[in-house]
Length: 597
Image (tube, rainbow, N blue to C red):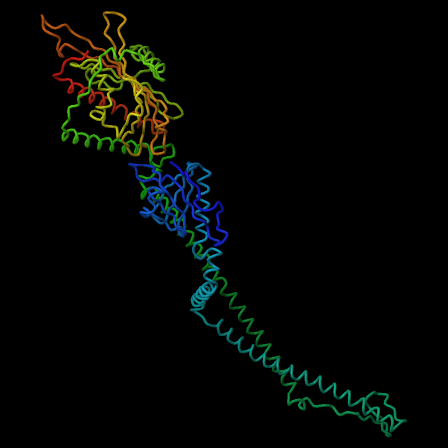
């Protein structure tokens, strides 16, 4: 049961018009509970939400559950290549796709929807703008500043001083700039005036020379400056010397304050580093505690999830597995006992064909296979086990003996079982008839959840599909098998005739395997012979004079892994109960009725 449908939107991951991820819908297998296991569900990924419906046709009735992807954690399974888990806090969805490629498609689509949600994505930043980030940053800075300088305010005081010095320095720069501009204007005007006066003097005093440039020589040999020096105070009333001294003092104050700031920051760096290291260590411990808690949560809170079902990677150990199976079987026994005490059996009039009808081979497509299976059972199943050391006697209760031969293949227990029994008052024909007749199957078989006849091949051969009740933590099993009943005439007149029912697994298009159940393979035979002891005198043969010898053989491949000790313990417990329950049922059904040889 996996994904059988792709996206319900376009083939692209992102809608080119809206820039948003497209809707994705399809069938995924979702783990429901330990009773029903994996079930097909219609899953829809839309608007940052993962929802599921029982089926696509039931979408109009509303979803059965949904997860918001903003805080969802996606965990691809470590061993199952088709499975991935979705968790939000303590809510977990176990999902399986059809194949690893579809699982990857779903995970990538979910990640894309998740990335486009909340404030962490590019589109969300475009939607919400940057003021929120600035406000958050300012708040964080304010909180940090308060905690950092709670015990001392010198650094803030020095920064305030620097602000004051900056304002003073700006005003002084403006003043000095004005002074420099004025100086430049005055110099330009003086040069122009000097050049003009020099030309006039050269016209009036041709013999006068000025070897020193702007100085004239008097008759007494002394020098006289042509232009008197200009006073700085004459330029807009600015005291250049005073401004220069103040400028120097201001810059010195700034440098001194900066030095103090640097010293304070260096002193506090160690404290800040210690705080950072302390916070990092706290964060590491919290992360370790979170990981540990999540691991424990997976082991405890979701006990009964798919990770605890049978399999080589199951989180449940072998002892717990055995205890759980045994407890489940005990509950089933109690329920069955209660049902049997409350149930009033309705007599079923099932016509029994004459023995000759069961002696024919048949002409259906499986006729050759049936004949081959019958001959194999007659050859090997009836052999005496006394000289075979591989068979171990595991149960002996009165006339009933159960043997087992240990066989494992690829880690899966395939132990053949063989039971012999002797039941008074019934014939081989009657035992095999009730074992084969599907009309009375549920009267004595308590492990079946439901079954149906897939195809009737002939009067003595049918194909049956049945599902067995689940025994948690084992997965639920189903079986598809051909069931045939045969009468084999004795070749020696002193030997009794043999009745046989053989059930062996086959394939059929109308009952394909699904992920809901593990498909088991079986090869089972019920072989019966009727022994008659002569009655006294002229009395007619009664049920007191007949004895049915039963040989029951079962070769079962469970189809999946489970602890070997558990499988063997269950087989040892259940097979004797099955034989006693079934033979008691046959005795009850035939009591007081004519003997059917």
